[in-house]
Image 1 (cartoon, one colour):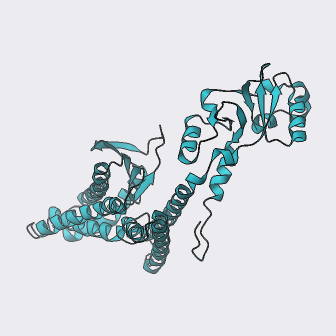
Image 2: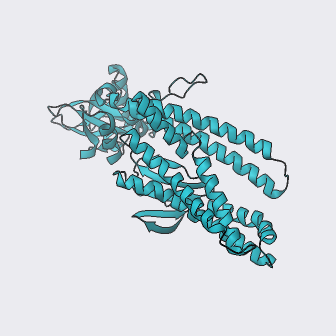
Image 3: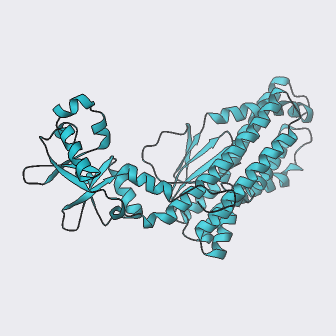
Length: 392
């Protein structure tokens, strides 16, 4: 399986595994979980090697089976590079490729702007897999019978054919799900509608994978149980990824309506020498949701977060000034009340904090934006879908 995963850019994220080169400028990582997959292939295919390759020893059969696992990983990498080359050609940066237990993931930053771009990125991977299978099939008959090369090429043809077929199932995060999303998007003019259709398709595929895993589970040996577990993991991965895609799409649709001006809390100006206990009492009396520390001229100098107040024991609040727990204002902690949508979130990502001072066009304070309020607004804008298929 080789799904394409859309991701927002996150600087300095932890490495995904062992570096495995850089192709077309895209770094490739091999997850440690891939070693589990390679071990499974090696153990389960060694018998097939001995049955189809003449004069092979037991030790050599395991080495050849491991070689088949490596060839499969290379095939998945080529599949992902197909996605990446098209993405880069369309101006969509690719952060990295990760090969892991269940296949591969291309982490593409941003979203295609048109249904046609979505389709081209999605279809590129399966076409590469089909090309590999076709080339292998063409050369298969020219190889000696019962040879190592003939057996490896046969496995290459079968596995790439299966990778292409499975990935074209109509459900996210599979490539077929992205093709479905592109089609519905083109017909309806709504990317969100396309994502909803493809996400529910992905959940249908996940259920089908679970049913198939139960149906095919007849071998109670270690390898049989492993295959069953892989099936369940694959189904869970598809189900969760489909839901994540739907949440992100719904969020992006509602994000432009999210404005700082709608979320700002009224504030109370507090002098630096006022105690925390007195400041809280005044805030409760004035029914405001935030505290701003000002200097003798009335200019805002710092913010006092709810978390900072809560860290001070009740018995010490009368003896602790707000200046002791306040966070001095930096440029990144002062935001305009005109910010909205992605620009607002980008400003918050640039300078992470629990609270921000909001100023108007004249530069005067109009209130405080609390990060938890933004999180609640984002959560309420992307509810989970109900059993009837209502949008979330």
